[in-house]
Picture 1 (tube, helix red, strand yellow):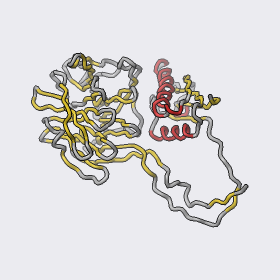
Picture 2: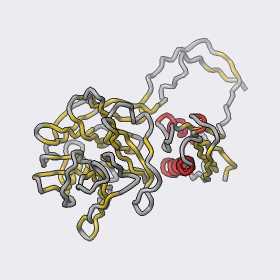
Picture 3: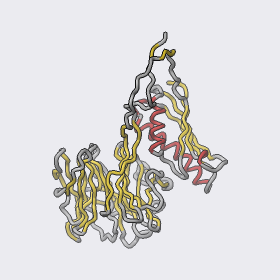
Picture 4: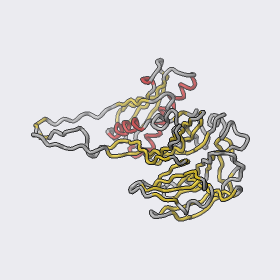
Length: 385
């Protein structure tokens, strides 16, 4: 049987989506943090002459205001949220010796305070007051200079035990170095943080074990986030939305947000009908994903390509995931990068495509060549179960 189709002016579907990297704010003010509540409300932390204050802006109409309820201290900062994302945890320093964590719920119009939690008592000389409180409020990561750091500023871990915080423990190497480490954030069993290098800073990440301790070596997040000659910090990931702040040498701060955005709709022009025989392209059975040097996480573009590949596979399918590294660097490091590329991709499948019940096996290898073509992960479809 034949059917009639119409030629379309451009091969773009009006429903097609792509991952977009969008500057949501550019300013000369000193942005210290950025956080997304729901899909419309963005919170910014700004260092001003009055102190460190929290402002909000609605993406729908760009209305902007200082959040009076959240700014109960001279220094204020968003340090986490509950799993639902409608409750935020706010660090507030009300005097040189008084610090606390206040909990606020967003009701769609304003923030209502629902509780408080103490902050660990410590003499912190850090300029960057970054911290992260887990959704269950049991784990606190903080940036601190306690005069016993590995370098300038280090990351410390404290646990909520028996109604109080444990003594903050230095995360030690390989996280903390002689450089400054700050802006901690945890997502999908991975720790993200910024590390200063001279006048620049780059976002790094590494896996966390079941005990909350770091495993492996830190690697720089992809070039979508990290730009040369920039100071990048405040990285976060909420669902498919990523956000961070980048400061260029001229003092311009830019807050970025990535997520799914509709492509510009293309006009559809109907022409004379053409009769063609129906054809169905077979679903792909393999995909190759490219990585940057020492990168173990997918870039935004590669994530979109991989999601598209998985969407064409049958439920309960068996996937073989093999990670590769090129032949640059020490043997231990090359093997670790190849292994992490495969293992973290498996975690991604389980986390974001768990309902599909894919069976995933992994392997890894170090290739003899050098360059982009050897830094990859290959995914092959095996028989259906």
